[in-house]
Length: 490
Image 1 (cartoon, rainbow, N blue to C red):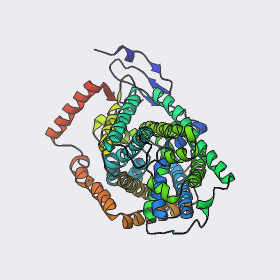
Image 2 (image 1 turned 90 degrees about the vertical axis):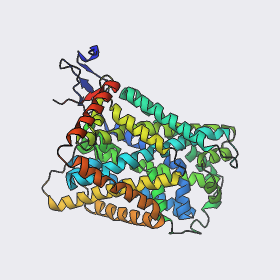
Image 3 (image 1 turned 180 degrees about the vertical axis):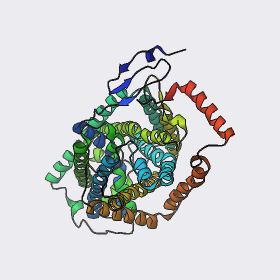
Image 4 (image 1 turned 60 degrees about the vertical axis):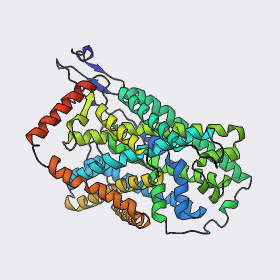
């Protein structure tokens, strides 16, 4: 039976216009509705997630001193800014959705792009969501286990993380308007949480609580530098988020680089001040002993108001997952649109206009990752899978400057910026490989599993007839079950 809502053209509040063509189909046109302020809000809202609440332990473990820890947080911010400015040039040179995937495809071709897509679908995105969801679970259950010696049961944390993923997956499937409203609220919560921590830390410094900053570099070590950098950079994840929605940004030539610079610089300052605040209340040994740094900080300094800290962190991580689902579902969507993933993943719901199949697959894979026993290994898998292709994309940009100097580039960074970023990315991958060779080897092996998949199912122009029929049958079944269709263009 034909859906009556498709017989009449209408426009949603988020700028998506739909029109009927006499059958169950839709015409989708994304408008440029994201302003400079909105762009900054998207970047900041995704960057400030779980990382600043769990990564301090990993950074300190690698640095082994307060002074080097703060330097690493600063270096990670500068590194992210260099990469983000390079991505601003890439985003305006190749103004299409998909970010890293699209850039690798345009510069290096289908094979390299597919390997990135493969490891992103299997590891990077699900691991990222699992990390944030587990952090959400930790902070939700922590108030019921105030004694650090009594840790909550891991299965309870896993189940709470699973419920969080499923709930937000459903929310994003229902509609972008609802998920956008949720995102605005949770962004305010996470900024409020950091503001409370920073102001409390400044009061502590005013009282003379600076003993942890004396002999700040005593015990510094560089043996764990790679892992420390990975942990710090995980907190900055999301600086490339605007590149996923560059087609919807108003005046992108002007607003994309400005929004990136404002958001990354602001988050860097917030992160450094937050870590300084942590050390006004906790010794390095105390920080290393806690899985919920903010809870210990609140218990020490906020008295009966300490209960608000795990609540704020839970809300922050909840909002980070929500915003990330909006952004990263586009990777699945664009990969399918480019015929490198099953066609079902490029389909949208006929009423809600959301990429329901992509969201569903992303959430299901993420739920599987939440049952990992080691969150630090998840961070390492995620970091390798993300930073290697990001470095390759920026290296490709440098190469493209030489190979195709006359290509239109509405925005250009000084060539030294991407060169420094590429050198730093190589150093990062090498150091992390030295520090955690097994984790890196697992990441490489997962990537290489995509090679036979590409040459058997993606590279051939036509699939074997039986396989093509099977895919068609499965796709049609899911289309009926999920009420999804292919996107139409003008």
